[in-house]
Every structure is written in C-alpha cells, then in structure tokens.
Image 1 (cartoon, rainbow, N blue to C red):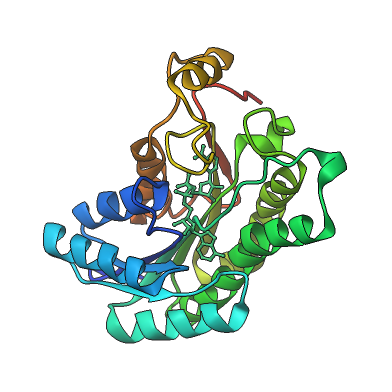
Image 2 (cartoon, rainbow, N blue to C red):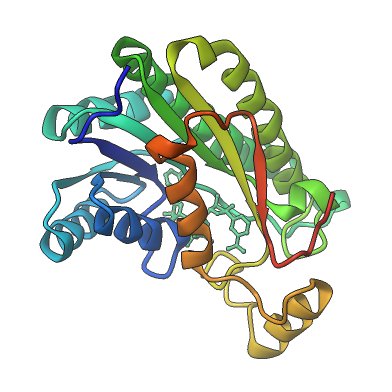
Length: 254
Ligand code: NAD
C-alpha cells in the first residue's frame, strides 16, 4: 500500500520543553509530517501542538494521557485520529528515568518504571497498529537506551535498563508479526542526550565525563535522535524492520 502524501506521526512524551520528543516533533513537521502529541499534561501537549502548527504550517493536535493507563492511551488516539490525517507513524518517547541502586529498588519503583517505559510503549503501539493494519502501512519507532545494552553506567539503573531492554525484544516481536501488513517496527538506542531527564545532574563536568566514555567528543542532542527517527519513519525505510540503531557517539559498539 502506498505511503500517503498527507500523513500523521503521533509522538508520546513530546511535551517537555528541552526533550527529545518536542525537538523531534518540530523536525518531522518541518519535513511535512502532521503531528499528534500525547503527554501526561493535556494542556502542555496542546501547547506544543499549537506551536508546531504555527511554525511549520502543518496540522497538529495534542492529547493528555498517562501511557501506563491503556484506556487513557486509547482515548487519546481516538481524539488525535479524529482531528488529523491518516496515522502512518508512532514514536514512543514517553519515559521516566530511575537512578535507584538495585538493593534499594522497591516493588513500587519497579512497577512504575516498567509500567511507563515498557507498558506505555505496548499500549500506544497496540492501539496505533490497529489503525495501521487497516490502512496497510505503518511505522513504529521506540526509544530504548544504551543503558539497556551496557547495564546502566550512565544515569539510570536496573528497572530502567530492564524496561528499555524489554522494548528491544517487544519491537522485534511486533515487527515479525506485523511485517505482512506493511508495518515496520524499529528501535533507537540513544546514549546520553542533553535533556532534563537526568533530573538536573547533567552538569558541564558530567557531560564531559560522559562524552569521554564514548568515541565522539560530546554528548548527544535531541536533533541527533530526531534525524534517526525521521529516517526510520520515512517511506524510503520500508525494507528496514526489527532493528536497533545506536545513536550514542560510539559508546556501545556491537
Ligand atoms: P524528558 O523527560 O524530557 O521527556 C520525557 C517525556 O515523557 C516528558 O514529556 C514527560 O512528560 C513524558 N512522560 C513521562 N511519563 C509519562 C507518562 N506516564 N505518560 C505520558 N507521558 C509521560 O526526557 P527525554 O530525554 O526527552 O527522553 C525521551 C525518551 O528518550 C525517553 O524514553 C528516554 O528514556 C529516552 N532516552 C533518553 C536519553 C537521554 O540521555 N536523554 C538516553 C536514552 C534514552
């Protein structure tokens, strides 16, 4: 099935001001994508959508949902699909960090981190692919982390590493089941990116130390990730599925 000219990408976790999601939404809108934003705060999501529509002349809409809550996610998609052109792509960015040492991880923390990062990815993917299967074309990209592959070592620890590693297995499995329907499913695994997810611990000194661990002499920017997302959801990437692309300055080579 053809990739439609008028197409929409939905991004979860795209309302935080310095986050990867918001930067990616702008990057994709600049390249002609209409944009749906899902984030915890409906007003913040709507505001980012408004700013995108004004700046790039595309259609955009925002909806509030806690991605850990499947009913809220489904309602948000219903709202966005009613307002925007054909849903072609989903980007799962909603996530939370967890720097808690393993011996201090409570049951609550474990479930919080798994429910948002991995459960949220499943809830949004499940709802989005229902539409994509009907349309005969789709792109799903989810954010893992170098933390999944190296066993932490950057900021977050076990619960986060487990959730982000889960996203890789989950994505490969959905890719295998839904390839016949024209849907590709891929993963981006960023190294440290300059956003607010590390809770104010990302000082200049810390950035230098993290960069020194990799091959390239800097940490990443949200635009580094946006460019990889743009590739995976493009029409041209239709023969690429089940893959994990590390965008991490050479921190993890495999
Ligand atoms: P961020 O904190 O700026 O953005 C995360 C977004 O997710 C926020 O807008 C937040 O409101 C939203 N969110 C959190 N919990 C939610 C929930 N329950 N329901 C809906 N939305 C929720 O962080 P970021 O650095 O832009 O991270 C984006 C993604 O990239 C995350 O999945 C993160 O794990 C991943 N990642 C980031 C880095 C990094 O160094 N920044 C590295 C590897 C992976």
